[in-house]
Length: 410
Image (cartoon, rainbow, N blue to C red; front, side, top):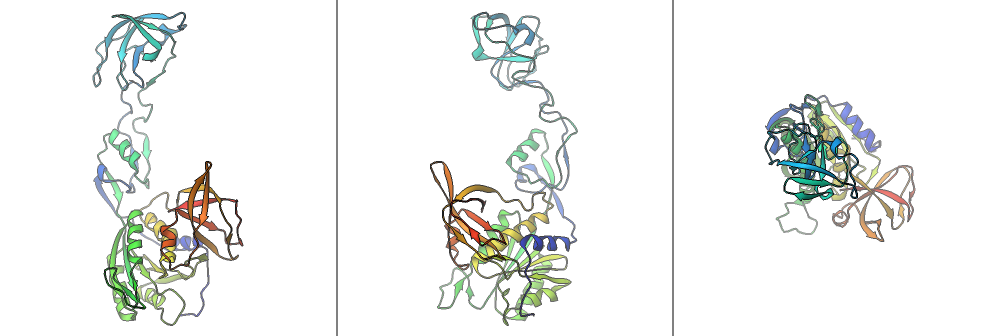
């Protein structure tokens, strides 16, 4: 392997990976109630109007708006109370001139009614008469048929990520099953003679396997299915055999460690032997995470991630996570929620790399502050003690205290 590697930006790295992939999204039909955070593999059209009947948005009285025109507290209008509309029923009557019907929020309006007077703007003068103290206009305090969704309209395109609100909307339309993309299976291979299972007592020079479990959690949160292949010793044949098995069984493979430029690193050679095109790039312009490897074998993305826990998680967040979304056809593969904050101290940097610096969000006098949590890339608690990260641009030499920054939330 070459002694040096050429660096490209994270955005260019993801674009290069995506442009070299030629995959077919696998789909399945599942119950809508089980589809939370799944990605639609079909366009959804409404089978009905929603609402399917004209309904009240307030407790009050269904009226003909023209019968209330000119009504004020000092000069009210009097209407005859003809009935009460029970919830979940269709009124069997219609309103005539100067008539009203008691209605509850969500109730169906009777024929000829075109507005609702809020109950607090009325007084009941007799058992069959109300006093209206404020006029209403046509359409006030009601929802018309199809005002939310019209029949046959597209309500969700293919690639929509199903959040709680989408699940509820589908149920409102009676759509109880949907076609979604399969969750990508992501193989996780941890390497290193010094790495041991978390349950083991460690000896001097050994470290517990952190990365397999942080990546498993991140993969799950991104909509993938993690599959751990254990800890593999620093041996070409053992690692190649495991990587070959993972490439056959999984949609994405991540090999942790073995991505720094040294004589012990064999990840690039293994990726090249797994299949064409092999390694696409070795090195991205970020800190932490510079020695990352990206490749494709058997038309499946292969990641060579740094062994340091912070580096591995940062790279997985900006490259592995959107790849999982991309393989599901998600329309928001690169979306990360951000919040504006004021930097509480300087962040030094070096031009030519993109620094990803953990920060802790705090508030003081209604102002949100971002305090940098400095630490080396093998210190996992720098991430535990942070809320998100600030990205120092590649051509910047740092960020100044009291400047406004965008915090990318974890």
